[in-house]
Image (cartoon, rainbow, N blue to C red; front, side, top):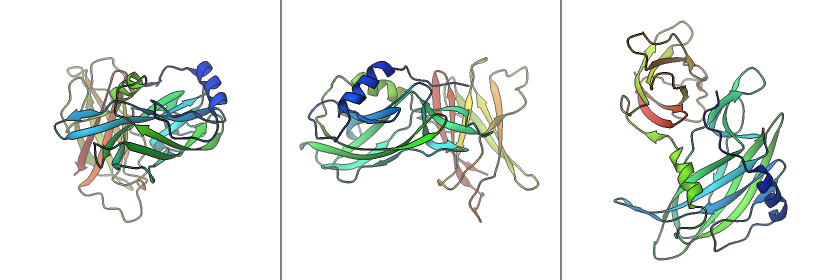
Length: 289
């Protein structure tokens, strides 16, 4: 089921990538030059400073553009794949950088399993805290990612971009990407889309987990699950028996507690559940009892 495929701009991007390939430099503008690779490329983009009750945050993003039919991966790639890596070492006047992950889609990996990621185009929004908001900031990124079609190619890029904090030409791209980042909500909360309950069922070999999700009737929903650490490779939740006729908004999913590191304790372990529909996405952190 395709949930989150961004519009393509391959023709324009292909020309831009060929023309702009090469060493990245510091640019006092809205975006770095593209760094081209086979079947795609990437760049940094900058946006307006966002101010709220908890302080000011510089806005930026990592944009990856791929040829039609090629993909890269989410932070948990599924049965196969390699997630992007982001190294901000060498940045100046920057205290912290948080990478946000837009809602992905699930697709067959060609080997009988499933992968989780993005086709065509994706922007990973960045929330940046400066050491001193009165001074300019320089973002330095070493990016690693996979470019995959029928086969996968490793890709790397090195960027530097000055952040002015002013609204620029790429602002709408960042706003659209941020709108597709799953919103954190408590278990049972959410309007339209919510994770209602999570419970364990004891089994032989492996326990299984049953998750109940609420969504408007006839709206497709996918559910993703992550453990407390990257070495937890939990399987993709699968839909089970449909909801009772008196509750058509309810969907049930199940997955085995399999793919855990040796000796892992599953009592009160924290799980991250991401529910994705065409127009909504939420993230729920909950303890498994």
